[in-house]
Each structure stands twice: as structure tokens, then as C-alpha cells.
Length: 65
Picture 1: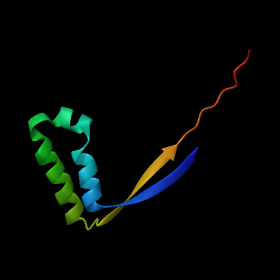
Picture 2 (picture 1 turned 30 degrees about the horizontal axis):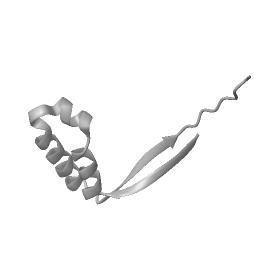
Picture 3 (picture 1 turned 120 degrees about the vertical axis):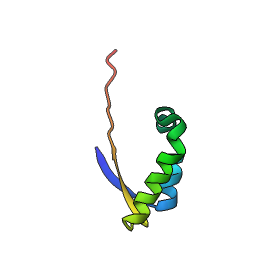
């Protein structure tokens, strides 16, 4: 297991949300309003760059013949 963080600017974060198919499916007609609200929230709270944490996990197995 390894943890890392990627620094992403606000425009990149908003673009990532705009490309999120699950959010689009769930929000339906409100999708643009939801993404715009995320952008406004980040701007209002001074988040020009966001550290996005990631966890990578590796599972391995040995094949027994």
C-alpha cells in the first residue's frame, strides 16, 4: 500500500468533476449547477490548488500448479 497526493489547480479539479460520469448520471439536469457550485465553493474558500490524496493497494498471489 502506498499513499500519495497530487496537487491540482482549481480548474483541473472542476474539469475532473465535469467529466465524472457517476455525478452526471446522479445529478441529471442539475449536473451543470452542481459542478458550478463546486467551483464557487472552491473559489470562495481560497482553494487555488488542492492536494488530492490517493491510496494504491496491490494484491498479489502465487499460482500453485
